[in-house]
Structures are given as structure tokens and as C-alpha cells.
Length: 425
Ligand SMILES: [Zn+2]
Image (cartoon, helix red, strand yellow):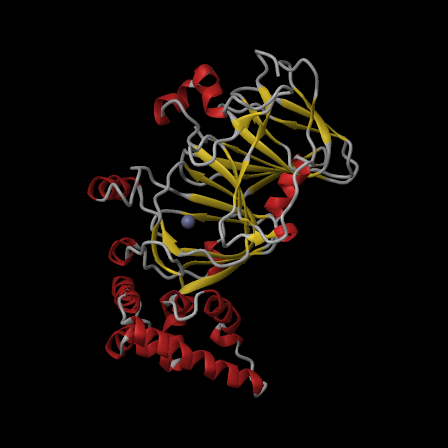
């Protein structure tokens, strides 16, 4: 890359968290290998996350013919004008978002993220646990069928589980259960939220030994029903077995009866706003988030659990599963469909570009923000007025585009699928 080029490839790092898909099963591993054929995928290693951005824990580097010494962060520091005034003013001299690919095998912790005001307070009070003062909204757009727990179920569903599953009732407490069941028969939303909070907090603070023994009873009972040929799907048995296998005896297993089980089909999105409880369960997804590490966890994790903070901060409003999806807005022109996922925040938005078979070119329009783009499927070459020669962009390739730059791509494959993250300033 020569000085003055405003579109350039990035070398991005991978996080090998234990919950990631292992070896070649992992889309993260496949993408990294597609971008760098010299890379050997280790068949027993989990490849959980590909990080695209400037975050200090795994910073992307500018890739040049000579090597990759310069980090994207350093390049931005040297070229502040390429970030744009709107971003500099609002977020300081750095990208406000972190873009990722996730390949999930085992469940991630039950968690929620604070809003800005809460994040500032938590950071001030517990700087060792909450290391920054930023909020952390997250957007997921599925690459393969992607399953997650997300948001509280409608109160009637929780009441129904409490009525029919005695083990669930036992860990929530009889009087809390009664309160929720009677609240579910009213239209009193504040009362329903209060009952939901009482039940959920009671579970989260329950004696771990009781949780363990009740879980065991429930699992045995469901297995007996299964062997007798009874359909146990109404008890969410498949998700429960999965969680129980991965975290035997963990209180988080019971959260399947509080939280919606949502499956996103490829291309479907989910926006995890502040205070919405969630846990990713399985599948591959794009993810974009504000630059922050603020996670409040309460279950399905060996990490620190902050049960009190989580129970106090959650949004206990029940919603049906399909209401937790975040639809993008699609426009199709000349065989190219652009779907924009723009949540109600300024930190980021994501565009998905997909070409119909046979389309030979594609344009990424100029944006009032720099962007990071990843090629998920297809091959081609990219050009831009600042580039001396065109840039090969094949599957797995990640490239940075400075503010106000268009990128034109000639496509040499049957079709192409790209995702682009940018700040929505
Ligand atoms: Zn999260």
C-alpha cells in the first residue's frame, strides 16, 4: 500500500474462547484460512471470534506487501481527517464500533449490557469489574441458523411453565410463582414486571444446592418422558439438555423458562439494546457492537457473576420471540440487494450486500464514516480513485475504507455476499 491510498486490506485476529466452534466446523476458522491459505486450522482448537477493528485486546493491522507492522489504530491516529469530524466530535479519535464474526458451539453466559448512565456509574463504583464507562449495544446478523436466548417471554408463557413444571416452581419459590400466575391474568403491566423481577431474582439468588437437585429431577423426568415417547418440546427440552450438558447444575439452565428461545435464519438480525437479557447458544453470526467490555453476567459462566446488578438493571417487559428480531431495510437495484440494519444509536450500523447470480459488479456507496467490510462469499477485485492498482477481494478478505470513499467491485464468482460496518453519524 502506498501513502494516500484510502482503501486497504486488514489482517484481523481470532479469539480462541472455549465456547467457539472447533477446527474446520468454525466459520471464523474458515474465513481466516480463506484470507490466509498458509494458515493451518488446528482440529482441536476452538475458533470463536474474528475481530475487525481497533480494540486493544485484538487490534487489526494494515496489510501491506511488505508486512503488517502498522495497526489500524495507528493509521487512524496518523490520519485523523479520514475519521471525519462528526465521529471525532462525538466519539474521540477512534472507531466507535467493533465488528466481529462469531462461531458459537457452547452457550455464552446469560448477560445484559448497561446503558450509558449505568455504565458510568458501574465504572465509577467498580472500576476493576467494569473497566470502561461506555454502553455496549450489540447487533447480530446471522450467517447460519443462529440460536439465542433473548428478552423475557410474555408473562403468560412464564406462568404456564410455573404451573406445569414443579421443579421450576421450587427454585422460584411458591409465593413468587403464585404472584406471577395471578399477575399474568391481569392487564397490569407494572405488576407483571414486578412479579417477573421477583421470580427471576429469586431464582438467581437461590441456594445452588437446591438449584442443582431440582435441575437433576427435571432432567430425569424429561428423559423418562422422552423414552416413553412423549413430546417434551413444550418443556423446551432440547435447549435445556444442551445447557445442562454444557453447564451441569448451573442456575442459568432454568433461564430457558424466562427468556425467549429465538432462532435467526441467515440474514435475520437481532438488536441487543441496554438491559435486555440474552445468551447466544449456537451458530455463526456477524456481530457489531460499541467499543466496550461492559458485560453484567449471572449464569452459564465460570466468570464473575454480578447477580445483584443484573437483577436490578433488567427490562422485565415480556415480549413474544418474533418481536426480538430486528429487521433490516432492503433495497434492490441492478441485481444487488443492500440491507441496512440501523439500530437507534449512533455508534454503528451494518449493511449487507448480496448479488443475484450473474451480476458482475457492485458498488459500495460513499459514507460519512469510515467502514470495515468483510467478504463472506465470492471473489472479485475492488477499485477506488485513491488506489494505484485494484485490490483482490476474495472470501475472508477484510478491508478498511476511509470516510467519503466509494468502492467499486468487479465480481468474478457466481454471487457475492459482503457485510460492512460503519458509524451511523
Ligand atoms: Zn451481549
